[in-house]
Length: 234
Image (cartoon, rainbow, N blue to C red):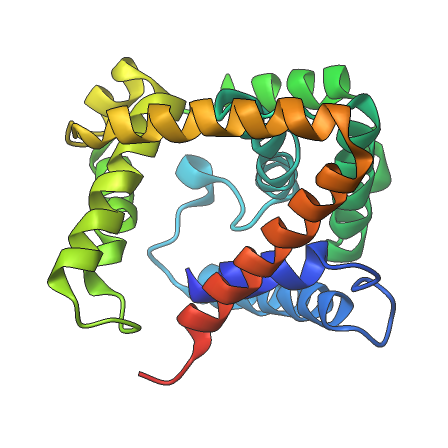
């Protein structure tokens, strides 16, 4: 989680994909980690290409890239925001370049919302239904707030844990949460309140460029604070 947070903050920061900046460094480092991981996994005699395909294959990389772009945009909409077409186009373009740096072939990278939705849908149709590994992965993610080291407060950890469950319920829906055995939480009502606040903030941003700019700056600063929490010494 810490590595992903650092990667996200650095890649999405202003001018951070220039060659001497942290986002570019993180992206190229990730590409090298992918390469090394492929080599080591394929050396493992228990890995079965006929069942699982090649490790970290290009199609799965494309799907992950779309998770950071079109799925992220979908998440914002579900949380009450209303991205402009310019913001949507910019997000897709940003992650197209990141995907290029990671080694995804250009013909697999998308330019439009429709292309992104089609590509993600096509990938999803090749995936099997959730199994024990899917449930175990989901569990490790939703339990993660209980294991963080940046606070010793049990109350705070449980608040974040319950809030995350609420986000899962709102954004994934009942069927997916049931399939992945993600627990129910009354915090979904709190998350719905956050959604309503977001809607109000969005309306204010639509009416004022100055307010919009402040929202953008505040949002990124909050992400940096979260990044610092994950990366500071225990």
